[in-house]
Structure formats: structure tokens, C-alpha cells
Length: 496
Image (cartoon, rainbow, N blue to C red; front, side, top):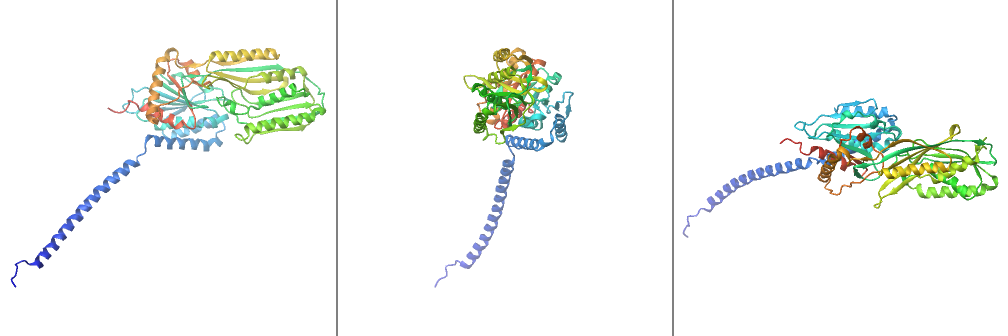
């Protein structure tokens, strides 16, 4: 057999050698590819790990709010609140001072290359008597103070209030703001809104010298409604029980159904600007009417519990027999007081065609101490005409009920779209709406008047050139407003 000259053995050995080199080459390529892929994945993971502005602000805002809520137990006075804010600022390396009015002012320098940007001021209030209602707006202010970037000069001002009175705003030095400072005034609100008009306020006091006599009847009962929510007057006023008005209506019901009674005492509440948390009165009844009295009281208690107890389970509405008092009000004084309490406005007074509250009132305090009736009432409205009408109506009611009417204080409606600030406020509203949309992706920012008194009124009295917006902070909008303010301040201030 003839040989072909092909050495299969050598071919196989060559193939094995070549395969080995190929495998080595493939292995090296695989390693290189794996490194490249790994680097890309690592880069993507690092890029993905970078939180968005929305995530950063939400985390910070929640942390600041949580710390505030955890500290409420130690914030018993306005001095305690101011100390808390000053310590917070020191820990965050933010310059801060406290003025003679008890206000705390954070001063944040403009960012590099943003020295000529429009300055801004963020304002909010605090009141140790009602801190719960201020926590969210304070948290938003803290969030802006620490997390603003590429911004002009920034002032964050915490205004001290006392018993609902805007003492801090009234005594704030207007020199903190130049005429072109954009002011964002934060406040708790019944609904989310940005306002260029906020309410005026009239504080009314009703007084009367009381006369007494010995009781004619033999059964005395103390009626008490307590543990109601006490909050600053706002558009939610109709959702909370007013124990003064409720007990006044009980007396009116007695009167209208001919249940004989005498009034010995009536007291409740602490301020015209807060819904009262409690009220109590002592009545003396004819023992022959006791069964009817008990039935009426049980019906009244049942109605109030049905209406409010689900939302406010801690409220207590009770009546109990007590010792016969040594004196009761003269019949004419009792009749006038009952008529006054029945006709007095309390709660939402008027809404516009869209259902927005435009005027409201609050019977905040009543006392019969030292032989003198005193009733404190606040009326607020975004319409000066309506506010004047409410005062005129109360004056008429007081005249008919033979009691004295006093207009103790009055603040005008704040209108940011009038006077020297008109064009500035319009421009600020437009630019803030753009920032709001840019941050949230939501193009439906609600612009709506608010009926409640805000520090905006005091600011305009000090400098009517300031462009001012009121931001009604709610649980749902606090993150949006914090982000919108930070976004607004960052507009057009980055390095070229």
C-alpha cells in the first residue's frame, strides 16, 4: 500500500497546540470583556446610587420633622423653642440670632457666583401654646435653610407668636429685607394653596357687668365639655367642636322649650384666636323639671358624640349634680346672655361659589369672673367688606342683648397684588409656579386666597415694596413646597 505523505499524528499535535493558544487568547479576551462590563455596571450602580433632589429633600424634611415632634415635650415656652432653633443652627453651622421680640433669624450667605442673585426670605411662626400646628411649616423652613444650593442671600425667620397673637411679626425689624427680597411666608392651612391675598382680622370683646341673686330652685348641675382640639383659627374650624357655642346652644334649647333654669357660672377657652378646648357651666333647675333636664342632656351628649367622637375620641361631655350655689345671675342677665350666645356667629361665616372659605369667626373665650361677663371673638376674612359686615352685625347683636361691644384690634386684608409690590409679586408668583412644576412635574399649583390672618399683613405694613407669597403647608404639600423653594432659589445662579 502506497503512503500518502500526510502525517496525521503531527497534524493532531499542531491542532492541540493551536487550540491551546486560542484558548489562552479567548481567556484573556473574556477577562478584558468582564472587566469592561464590570466597570460599566459599577459606574451605573454608582450613578444610580446618587439620590435625586426630591429624595434628598424628602429624607431631610422627614428627619427634621421627626426631631421636632420628638422634642415637643420639652418645648414648653417660646424661649425653649428659640433655644432649640439656635442649637440646631449651631450644629448645622448656620449663623443665627435671636432678636428682642423672641424671633430667631438664620442668615445664610449667598453661594459663590450667586452674590447678585435675588435675595430670599422664608418665614414661619412658632407658638409654644400650640406647637403641634407649627411643626410642618417649621420643618420646611429648616429644610430650605440647610439644603438650598446656588442661591442668593437667604434669611430664614422663625416668628414668635403668643396665644395666637403675631407679636414676633409685629416687632420684626424690617431692615432684614431689601425691597427686592422675595418672601415666602409659610403657614399651616386647611388646604394646600399659594396665596397673594390673606385675611384681615378683627378681635372683638363683649363685656357686661353682672348682677346676682339667690337661687329660686333646688337642683344644681355642672355641665362640662372638655378635651376638644384647641387650634389656631383656620378653614377647618367647622370640623372641630366649640364647647362654648355648644353649651350656649344647650341654654337656648332650655329657654325655647320652657325648661326653667338659672345660670350660676359659665367659663371656657383661653384666646379669641384658638378654638376652645373646654367649657363648663353650672345651672340650677326646678326639681319638677329634672326628668326633662336629664333627657335633654342625654340627647345633647348623644348628638355631640355621634358627630365628633370618631375623629376626637378623647372628648368628654358630662353633667353631674353639684352643691347648690349661693347665687345665680339675675334673670335679665341670663336672658341676654342666652340670646347673645344663640345669635353669635361661630365657624365658617361665608364661602364663595367654589366652596372656598372667605370669612370665619371663633368664640374663643368666655368668663363670668368678678361679676363681669367677658367674651372674646375673632373674625377673619379675605374680603374687607365682609369683615366690616361681621363687626357691624356683632355690634347690632350686642345692642339688642344689652351688652357692650368693643373692637379691640383690627388688621387689614393683605393684598400682595396692590401697591408698589404689584409687579414684583406677579413675577414672583409666575417664577415660583415654574419652579413648582419643574420640581414636582405637576402643572396645577393651586393659587387661592386664604381667609386667615398671616404675618403677610404685618410685613406689608413695614415695607409695601416686598413681593410676598403665602404658602399654605399641609401634610401632602410640605415636600412639594420645600422642593419648589429650593428649585426657585437655584434658578439661574449656577456658574456659567
